[in-house]
Length: 242
Image 1 (tube, rainbow, N blue to C red):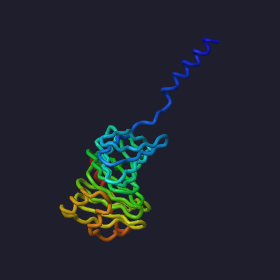
Image 2 (cartoon, helix red, strand yellow):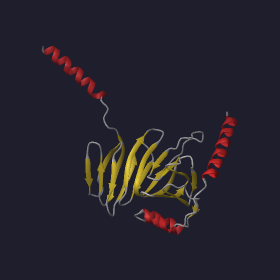
Image 3 (cartoon, one colour):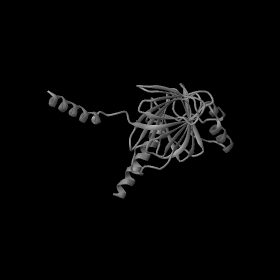
Image 4 (cartoon, rainbow, N blue to C red):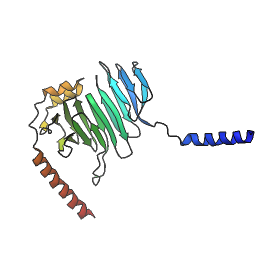
């Protein structure tokens, strides 16, 4: 009887390591203010500057008034800076890509490094209520609400598309901005003066984008035609390299 008990205990202990624990996908740092982290198994409120907390898949982060939070994606040179009254959600993090959601608020994203040109995969993807944002490696700011998503590219190039029309994707180069209204296409990118860029970066709310005079919404047919042309050019270039 004793031998049987020890055998069952040994088998039980051997199985324990095989049970997957929730893996850490990011690290949150509270610089000032307050932040609430809501997860499937826990909810925590942080108020002390310098407080840190591991983030797991599907964790939701809600920042308070006069708050600054930094999130470092584990194992990657990817940093997210959340402003006040932002609602953020961790998504799927793999070696190839990082996917997150910014439901409301303002955030700056510093994504270093780039994927190989042959790869069509976007290294970092953001989903808002109205738009899909994708990059391979760059620095940019996103302001999001229930009805609008605005983007300012600081360096590199960022792609922007409506949630309901993901194929209507445009590219927003450095120092330019675009916005997506609910049930509309992105606006044509416009140049943003250095002073205005500094104001947007410093601001604590997505309302900072109101100072930008955005362009007209792009026409779906023209974007599809242009993207198809780029796709064929890329395929031909790849064939030449083989």
